[in-house]
Every structure is written in C-alpha cells, then in structure tokens.
Amino acid sequence: MAARAIWKGYLKLSLVSCAVALYPAASSSSRVRFNTLNRKTGNRVKRQFVDPETGEAVEADEQVKGYPVGKGSYVLVEEEEIDALKLESTHTIDIESFVPRAEVDERYLDTPYYLAPDDRVAQEAFAVIRDAIREKRMAGLGRVVMARREHLILLEPLDKGLLGTTLHYAYEVRDQSTVFEDIPEVDYPKEMRELAAHIIERKAGHFDPSLFEDRYENALIELVKSKQTGAPVRTSSAPKASNVVNLIDALRKSLDAEKGAPAKPKSAGKTSTRAPAAKKAAPPKTAPQAKGKSLKRAS
Image 1 (cartoon, rainbow, N blue to C red):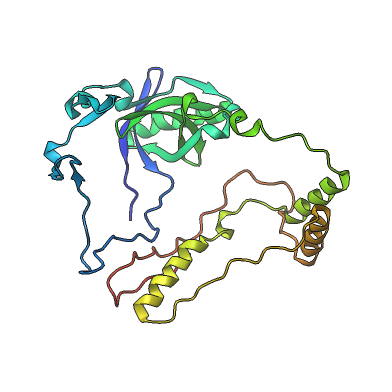
Image 2: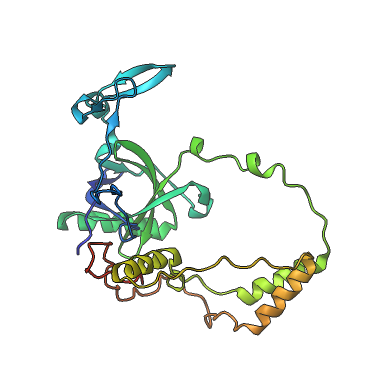
C-alpha cells in the first residue's frame, strides 16, 4: 500500500520554494492491540467523559477545553480560538538556518519523517535544495505545524529525499545533572576496565536493526494464537539471578563466556556510510481478530 502523507505544504529556502509532503518514517500500527471488553457480555466497551459532580456523561458537543488557573477554576478556550492561531509554519517549512549535524545533541531528536516533492513541478526545486544541503554537509533547521503544535525540524539529505526529524525544545530536555550529580567518583582496579574492554571488543560489530526481533510482540502473537486454537499457553520463567557477588570474578566469567561464543561479524575494508539495500518487505501482520482467523508471527 502506498504511503500516506500526514502533512502537505511547501519547503522554502529563501525565495526558492516547492510543494512537499511529509510521511512517517516509523510506525507502531503493526503491533498487536487489544480492545477492552465487558467480561460478562463479551461486548466491546466505549469510553465516556463523565461529570464527577452530576455523574452524567458529557457528549462531544458539550465539551470545552479549560486551562487551570486555580482550584476548580479554569479559563475556557474554544476550538475556534485555537484554530485562529495561524502560524506561517502551518503550511510552510521555512529553512531558517544550517548547522553541522554533529552539533545536534541526540537528546533533542524526537520523531523521524520522510520529506518528498509533492508533484512533478516541485521536483527540480526540491532536488536543488537537497543537493545543496548535501554538498555543504550541513543540516537545515526549520519549523512545521503538526496537530496544531509547532515543531522544530531538522532536515538532512537521505537517498533521493530528505529526512526530517522533529526536535524537542530546550525547555523539554532535562539537565543531566539532576540525575547524574549524585553518582560518586569510583576508584577501581585497572584490571576491571581492561576486562570490560575485552568483553566489548568481543561483542563489537555493526548496527543492523534486522538482527533484533521484538520478542514481546512475538510472545503476544503466540499467546493469542494459542488461545484461538485452544493449545496450551507457553510461559517462560524469569532468568535466574547469578550467584557471582565479586565484580572482578563476574567480569572474568563474562569474558570466558564470550570467548566460547562466535565473534560478531565485521565488514571487510572501509565501512560504507550508505544505508544497506532494502530487504523484501515481509507480509504485514494481522491484528487479533475473531476466533478462526489467522494471526501471523512478527518478522
């Protein structure tokens, strides 16, 4: 199925602009999801907003947003008033500046999107902007409005298009000192660090997300399939805790265990910076359905 754009507008660099569309680069829609049912009747239940004073359900046309300004006191804000807050970035991603990609702290990265030209007329201007960014080895910073909120967005060349990653604002990223300040300086034998370094070396390889499967998702699928067919539900026990209490002994035993395991594969020669060729997509998983319908294993 063709990807569906979640936003359409214009990409603008100074006086150059082109029509573009934004597509999600990641999705959780294939995960197993459950409905909430009435245990007695088996019917699916629905959520309602209820007035805690009257106990009555409040229908959608009677609901209004309120900002708390005191105990039990709110400033009412209408949907039309929010819609009236039109920002230039509502329909345009205006690239305001360029920065070296390495300067962008990873903690600020939020959600990835693909940015592509939206029509044939836009293709030339889009290619010019994309190739100029690639040539300068920089990343563009702009703003985009999605779901009424304005987001900072980082733009980088990716294959034939652009990768746009929304960023957290500075006030959203917590200072690490609030968590790390109580970690004391520790003096430990040099041998411990050397043993840990050897373990890391044994486990070293290259990032390949296809090597990691979602074990919890697969377990959910097996659970639902077992209940569909009436087969016994397989359960797994938690791993037993290690009886090693001495850290250096634990490091030595870990290293011995790694020596007995095959080394991680490493690429020969110079490492390519290009993304690996896309593998043939696996058939989509089917969400849990009524008894008798199939449920496929997660790939």
